[in-house]
Length: 426
Image (cartoon, rainbow, N blue to C red; front, top):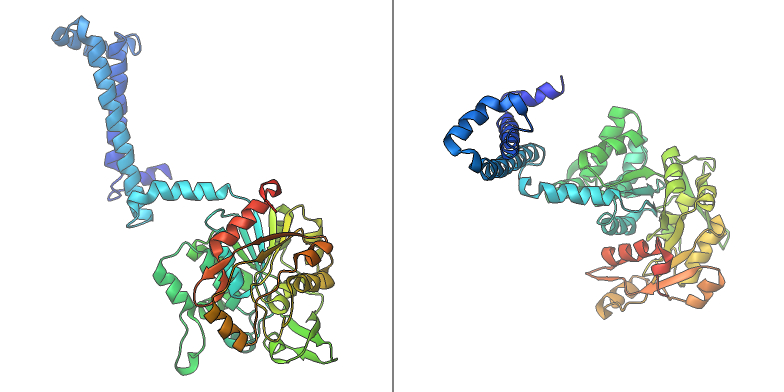
């Protein structure tokens, strides 16, 4: 019955399929003619009798070859036309690029399996680079956010914070520019002021499906993302920070505002569990990447979910930490690269194989602005990192924009090289 659906009227496919079939039969007759009837035998005897009358026996072979070439050429053209009709229905406006799109997608499926862990803008920057090289991507995203639109939806609707997950979905999506603009659109007036359209869409899908992970999965299908995005846990967790002066700060958004030195962070409830899909992705990964992102509020919270450090320790993947380019006010003021790494080790143990550091120059005007905000470049103390038993990849990763960020393509390229360590020159 499924085959018969291709014969429905108005599909603009039947004509090309029938022409391809007819062309094949004509080519078959041409082969038989060039072989003087030895292929089809008595089946085409009457036809060949008339051919010999008009063409003569001496012309049967060259005429047969011409018929074969004409038949096969027409068949190929018909198949291409049918494929063009199908591509036009599935991807309007991209009919001429259909072959390139299919080739690219099949090539991406053969790419390495990479798991990225974190949250915030830094993670979405990395995903934009990696999706050009592989579709075997899994983003495990923190759900400890309690500020802004995500915090409001979390408090009012009781859902997990959607903001960081939305950013990752947009970064991985095969989308039209208008769709990205729509999902990232933030209302500026009325009761919806401060909310982004993507956050509201995830909230609506969570209400429809009854589960936040199903909402993420359904929006992933709509956006045709390359890979998958998973919340670190489905538990309603709160992030706490213990400061060196003894104070305890509750809430991810309040930690950077405490003006203290962080001793450790932890989650409540502490027995929150990860998704089975996240653990499976880590077990099968060729590489696991932490960051870039806020050390204490985007990266480490994922590693505090029960079972995550153990899964990372068991994994055979290459484990990489992408250190931030700049320190972060309220979290990592005065931190060197090794201090970032030591904080991860203090919370999870020694899990990492490599640290990726930036050694590129930052524009003076940007340095002035960031220092005015209390941030400065992270110092790459490579020898201290090596004493911690971790290898270093240090390059210019600066993206020349109005903010200091990693270049997505350079960063992705460095990570892909680390999947095959022998290719890395250090």
